[in-house]
Amino acid sequence: MTILKNLEPFPYVPLAHLPTPIEPLANLSRHLGRAPIYVKRDDCTGLAMGGNKARQLEYYFGQAKQQNADTILITGAVQSNFVRMAAAAAAKCSMHCHIQLEERVGDTASEYRESGNVLLDRLLGAVIHRFPHGEDETGADANLQKIAGQLKRAGARPYVIPLAPGHPPYGTLGYIRAAHEILTQIDMLGYSVDRLVVASGSGTTHAGLLFGLAALESPIRVTGICVRRNRHQQTERIMSRCREIAELIGVNNPVHPEQVQLLDGTLAPGYGQVNEATLEAIDLCARYEGLLLDPVYTGKAMAGCIKIARDHDRHDALLFIHTGGTPGIFGYSKLLTDHLL
Image 1: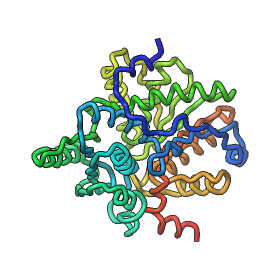
Image 2: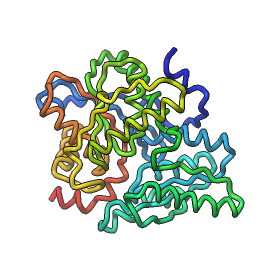
Image 3: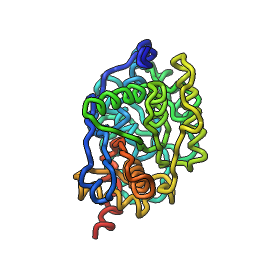
Image 4: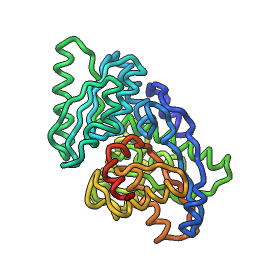
């Protein structure tokens, strides 16, 4: 029995354009002088400029619809791709959306607070709330529940998409399906892939892919590139997510601790802050492949992917998961412009 059978009881709302393509990054591979690097284009999922969150939201909105909710609440950083796509999904599903923007980055240029994802949040009709702390997931969730309580007393039927661990990880189910999709595609295309590289932040995408590949008995390794926490903190988060997935879908956890691979060499100086390796990755992908990366997630993840390409076995074929985030580029326009001058 394939692991997909275990997902059948869970409702979901189709939101993403699937399957997303896998493409060779031939020019970048030649530039780095190594075996092929491929890209899984989950920036092409549709839904208000696309991104990995579309797969996750399909299951969260499935739960919301099952509970007859009419309002979605979600929390994230000021330039969060997740809240932007949740607002888009809410519009598509004729639901209201309240988003809470957390202060994770500190002092930033005005476009960080007004352009990019924030502009799209407003365009999509979301009600915006602010939360003054950036490293308090439990507090952010608690404040979201407080807003939900106020809405409920006013007659709404709210559904909260939580941020912190400890809740049923419905969003990971979309990436268990994605693991099966990837294996099907690379078999059809005749590609051989040794390692998958993905940004590791909330851990939902990373854990879902890792769990899915392990359950499907694939030998492909998964390396997460830390974009918010160091590898020691993130390792426990990913293992915790995998345990939560196993409990949710009623199977034994197929992921062993040694399978959780994380690199944090491109994380500094911290979440949403840019370093030279990230700027180089953004430059190389734009100029060699016409591929756009954002400074927060995909830029840092590709910086990690390039580091793997340079430092590890040059015969390993890598598959980079492009998780989207394109609107975030405009939130960092001054920084990127200064870099290009």
